[in-house]
Image (tube, rainbow, N blue to C red):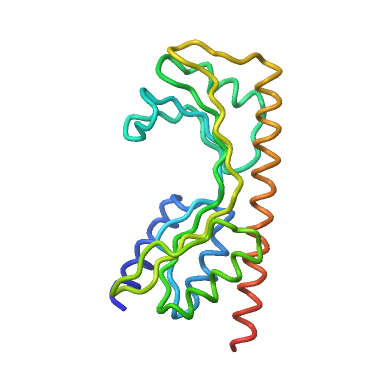
Length: 192
């Protein structure tokens, strides 16, 4: 249980430093209130404008814009204006939550709830002495190339459409987080 204490301390510090997405804090607090679960990392879902020197080179990627809520087209355009070289992408990334579960039965229970809420890519990532690490992940995901070698390859109308789609997908994924919070709250109430 030492790992749980350390993880929860790290989480509380991250909250104090503003490093935890505000719209997922209640859900993470709820998960962490169960003695047989604790979270290790999370993201509430985001829209990103990112520049990468080469495909697959995450290490040297540069975030030109990052939002955990719906974004205006102008904000995306302003981020695109910072682009200089490499590849330019607009991304919409699903919420993701990593949870260590005490045992396989608790992991199955939490995975079932996540699946019921539409987190279809939820899976077991690792089983070790700490417990069972599960990843709660949804299907919403968008990777749109916008530029190459410092040159934008889409026009303004395309960007408007892509931002509209990213916002719709992000909103859909946030609803799934709300479902997850409701169902876990119900689980907490029914277990007391």
